[in-house]
Amino acid sequence: MASYLPVLPGIDPPNHSPDYRSTALRAPHLPPVRLPADALEYAGPEVGAARLRPGGSDLTANGLAQGQRILIHGRVSDERGCPVTHSLVEIWQANAAGRYRHDGDRYDAPLDPHFTGAGQVLTNANGEYEFLSIEPGAYPWGNHANAWRPKHVHFSLFGPAWASRLVTQMYFEGDPLLPLDPIFMSVPDAAARQRLVATFDLSRTQPAFALAWRFDIVLRGPQDTPFETAAHG
Amino acid sequence: MAELTPSQTVGPFFHLGLAWPPAPALPGGVSIFGQVLDGAGTPVPDALIELWQADAQGAPQLLGGLQRVAVDSEGRFSVESLTPGAADRAAPCLLLTVFARGLLRQLHTRLYFPEDAALHHRDPVLQAVPPARRATLVAVAEGQAYRFDIHLQGLHETVFFDV
Image 1 (spheres, one colour):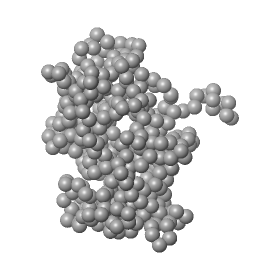
Image 2 (cartoon, one colour; image 1 turned 90 degrees about the vertical axis):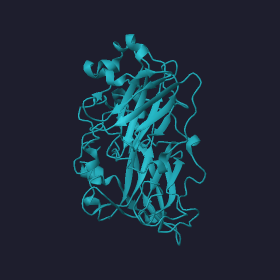
Image 3 (cartoon, chains in turn cyan, purple; image 1 turned 60 degrees about the vertical axis):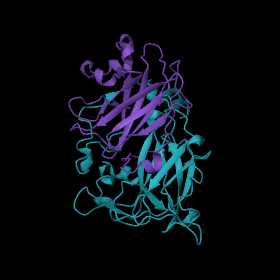
Image 4 (cartoon, helix red, strand yellow; image 1 turned 180 degrees about the vertical axis):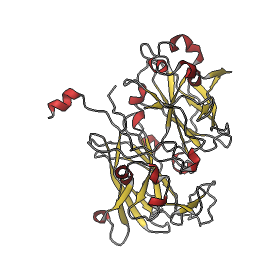
C-alpha cells in the first residue's frame, strides 16, 4: 500500500464550525482514530465510465438553458503534481436564478426546464476535465438573518484511493458574498480557501458563446519514498 | 508539492448530482441496513453513504465494489455489499463514509461482522480503537442482514477515523 501524508492543519475545515449552524449536532465530539499506514483506506476502487450519463458534460441542453453560459474546466492532480487520469468528476449546482432542480429546494426562484443542474465526465489522459454550464445564482438559506450562499458549483472526485475522495465546492472570483459565507470561511487557512475560487479564464472563452472559468483541483496521493525523493534530488 | 484542495459540505441537494440507481443484491454478498442519527438522537434525513471493501482474498476490490446510497426521510439506508476477505491478522470489514449537510468533510468509519469476534482482538485497526468504543464498529446480525447504525455524536458516537 502506498504511503499517504496526513492532511496539513488549516486546509480542511473542522467539522465543528459553529458559524455553520448545521454542524452543531452533526460534528463528532470525540477525536478521530488514526489509521495504520497500510490500512485499506489508502487503496481505492476504480470509478470510471460506468457512472457517466448521456450528455454528462453539458448541463445546458445544447445551450438552451437560461443564464450566462460558462465553460468550467481545470486539471485534477495529486499532491506530487501527477495528473489524476480517467477518473470520475461529478458536479451539481443551482440554476441561474439560484434554484436547484430538487424537491427539497423551497426557494421560489424559477426552475428552468432546459437546465439539468448535474453533470459527470472523466478526466482525460492529462487529468483535465470540462463542463458546459450556466453561471449559478446565489440563493438564501436559513443559517442566519439574511444569509445567502455565494454562487457555487458542487464537485465530487475520487482520485486513487478511498483516502483521496473529495467532495467540495467551487466558487467564483470576485463574489462579494464569499467573506460572509460560513461554509467557505470554515476553511481556516486563507490560501487554502482561495484554492476553492475559480479564476476567470479569457483564453478559454468561446467567442460569441460562453465565458470560461478555471478550477484546478489537487487530491491526496501516494508519496514517493524517501529513497526515491533522494534519487530525484 | 501541489497544495490540497479543501473539502466542503455535500449540502442538502446532493441527490441531484450523486444519486446512483440502487444496486441489486449481489450473489454471495451481504445486506447492510441502518440509520444515521445526530447528537440529539434525531434521524439525519439528508446523508449519503458510500461503501467499499476488500475482495474475498483481502486485497483491494478494484472493480465493481463501490456502492452509494442516500438515506430516506427517517435517516434509514440499506446497501448491498460484496463479502470481504481479510489479509493476515486483519478481520474482514467494510469501509463506510458519511457525507451530509452539516459535515464539512466526510466521516470515515468501518463495519466489522459479529461472527468474526475471535479475529477482532488482533485486527490492527480495531486495536487502535479504545476498547470501550470498539462495539460501535461491530454490526448486529438481524435475520439475513446486518444492522449498522451510525451515531454522528452523543453517548453512542460511532468511531470515526483520521484517514
